[in-house]
Image: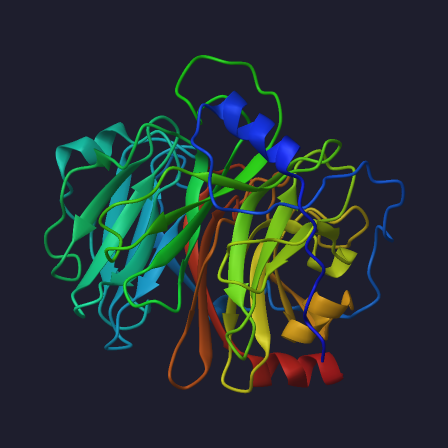
Length: 393
């Protein structure tokens, strides 16, 4: 399988973007964005496995009458039992709620105490495990808009720092993915902005850009952001990154927020130094806030909000099952999963996805799971072998 996409430079556009964003020139090559003249099919042909009615798979993580609870991130610790979760009291913003599970998410603690500054969060919090070059482990939590802030724990979440700025820049849904690079202690984090928050100066939205920022000290400090993707007539955002099975390539799945196209993907073969031109994905992978994990047989499970143009599960919490080669080759994959039925529009699904030693997938998110009630947090668990049997029927 050839996974070596073509990379083309366009230094003038890069220089212009950096100047408009008030950022320093970075050692990066971007591909020339083009106006898209064709669009892929708006629907898909692979089957849908529906487990939304299987209540025995569902665990309510948190629910509060009349209170919007949304946009969670989970983190499974190395004991493969302890799971942490954070989410805002509000739609994408609000005081951060923090909980812990000691049994892979089957039961959850009460809401745990948090540092005072966590009450001031104005974006979606995201959790990540990082390890420095000396092997020191820590967990970091980002909260975005301007400036992007970060909290740190070095005792697996028992004690957390306050939220502190990581630099003189901002962004939206910051660090939905953090990828460890081949150099020990080096990490690449991904986020997007539409021009309003990257510099902190008041501005009208002007264009969506996807950015990376680099840490060389195990997540403690981060570089000025580098733009890596943009299209003039599509709004690329909410990057969800994953590596190829051999580890040599990074793929980033992108939400398309103008709703004119399917989702997109970009690739890097040099640890994020250069990126391919954004390419539209099949409708089967179209959605918002992709989170991908490999199962033991090498397949991918990707969770996202279904925003496909033509889909029987549009607006619901769905998953996709397939192989990395499907992403590279632009094929549809094996099947989709309707995880839960969202009862109000498309307001759901900023998911956490964890894979347990027995190959169980534990995926957790928010949604309007009960008609007429505020959204709340639910965890669902299953194995691909169970879904395969359903798909075979």
